[in-house]
Length: 460
Image 1 (cartoon, one colour):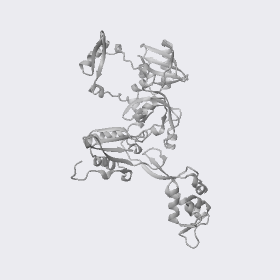
Image 2: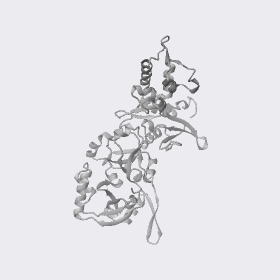
Image 3: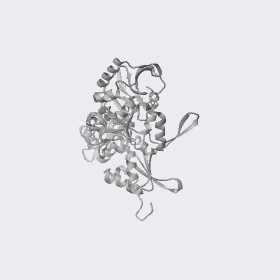
Image 4: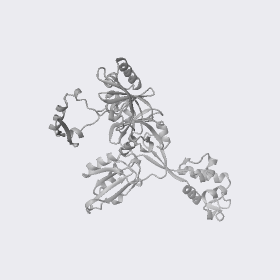
């Protein structure tokens, strides 16, 4: 909504009666906020302005601005918090998580698609279609966007996390944000900007120089200063902790991964008698039962040799190659079943503890571990596809950095949309294997590259 510049119609100070009405509207729209929190969000005497504007698509929007920052906006009589408000009350809305790479697309006006969601071990928040939700990034609980759910959580899982998940209304860094980003020094303990800058310079957080007469400019900022790096969003209050109990981060448990088969259009005639249609998902045992029942029901078991099955026109069309149509009349049971499974489309089901299963077409990509050469012939270990198993690349990188005493980086995975890879200095396949197999209890069959671990006695 605010991805492009908007036109301001008016900007006026709020009246006393409108201020009281706004407090009442906030209490109704966000019942989890206590009386003190509502009074803090909509202060009684401090400056509060009403900005009426037209978004670039023509929508009439009312924005409430406090201390120079937009705190709320109203569209079609619905009240929404801004990201500034959510930074102060991060548990105000159910929060979904996506990758940092996705933020740029959201700022550009894109909606959040379900493949971009990150599934934590605790699962997804429970919402209904039309519910207002917050969106945060992996590794940072501060919300960066606000959107409306395009479907319920149950529908998201049923869809296999495909399709549009959220209609995004507002994001960090959109055109509503530049309306804020103001620091009101008068409301701080410094009272004057000169005192604030002097203190920051004494702590060596910034460097200030008088580049022109009478004008002081900030020429450098130490982003690695402890005062900056230690800044965190305040922990939620006991009340909000109770409300958000179900969304707390839980210890990692590996998902249950089950191979499935999907019925393609070319096989529908064979499966329709059993009540299945194109796109139906089946387990291998179900496929075998259906084929056996079909053969027996249609009297296709060879009377002279029970190990052979006669092929009727439907079986011929479904499982035989063109050059076999007039030469192959019977098949052994094992050959018939194998051919049927090969003609079906591969699929899989992922179930995280306590969550509804997620079904997707194709084969699940294994966690891929490779070694690569970098500058000065140095080796690095690269691991991809952690997200498919509910693992956060940033968390894995932090653990490996500590275990291996080596530098780690998280970067976009080449050729993979919205996927990340972890790079660790040196050959760290042994440490990585121990973490995945022993601690995370992932099956070995879902990990490739473990054989690249350094052999005993050899230099890493």
